[in-house]
Image 1 (cartoon, rainbow, N blue to C red):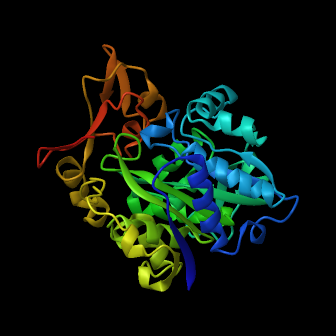
Image 2 (image 1 turned 90 degrees about the vertical axis):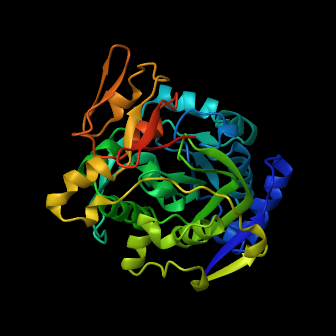
Amino acid sequence: MTRVALVRCEQYDLDGVRAAVRRSVDLLGGMPHYVPRGARVLIKPNLLQASAPEEAIVTHPTVVQAVVELVQEAGGKVTIGDSPIGPFIPTTLRRIYKRTGLLEVAQSTGATLNFDTEAVTRAHPTGYLIKRLDVGHYVLEADVVISLPKLKTHGFMRFTGAIKNLFGVIPGTTKTGYHTKLVTAERFANMLVDVVTFVRPALAIMDAVVGMDGDGPSAGRPFPIGAVLASADSIALDVAATELVGMDPLRVPALKVATQRGLTSGRLASLELVGDPFAELRVTGFRQAKSGFDVSAMPAWMRDFGARLLVVSPRVTPACIGCGMCEENCPVQAISIGDGRAQICLSTCVRCYCCHELCPEHAIELHQPWLGRVFVR
């Protein structure tokens, strides 16, 4: 049985987070079990965009600092790095590190922040769908990868956790190509699981102190969960995390395909849970992402009809300032800027919700035309 540690942690005070992170890792055998002395260790948080920690969009810097300190204590040499969607260039990374509090973490711990933006292609012979993977050079330079996901909902994938966090190893705008080619939830989810089996992180430690529900992964509601979760198995960690907030793991596309591929049962009963009692940590009132009907299951001749009426579609609100972030990152070029605001061509849109995910003004709402529903923060 795969072991998953769950430890209560209700606030982001550094000493409390240090204690919770240490206990979660000790329950799995301790950091030296995963980090040999002298190893080059990449710590990969969720750095979706340049946002303040209290917005619950990125992995909180206190969690990152606690893990950095544990790795250094074990003798590892730490680099902190991620590749958000958008230009993968040093100026963008510098802004994100500062805004998310990681510049301060690096200064206080002596950890290195990654500014290597080289992209390379590597074979993945055992990949189910992706046999050649585009990946940041800095990832391949690491001897050990430790993933630090944030527990959040996601409009397209329903859940952002340890599996989805590793999509960040694909450099910058290269991600848009994956969205373009893999337009169904099933295909995109298989790609995400292939990334997990390629990177094979030694450890995943999830920031679930305050997660995000509803309209995640960037425009949802910060939701207090009060826990730190950890496992050597990213897929098992997501099974426990989804159950913790009342989601059915098998309704999460990445966990569904991982189950079909025999990588998990998708059920809590197959996990060895250690730490604080699961029943005491489980939360209620967590609102799931509203992504609408999955038209990929419909006959081909019905899909256009289904997309128009049943699938949640992005819609521009008056909050749009015409910054062009959505236009630059739309994988199918369905967005243009006119009269000072974004305009979306829904006949071209593939409903990947990248625009909704990246909008710094939260000016893209999700709308289900047939039912007249709007899903907002």
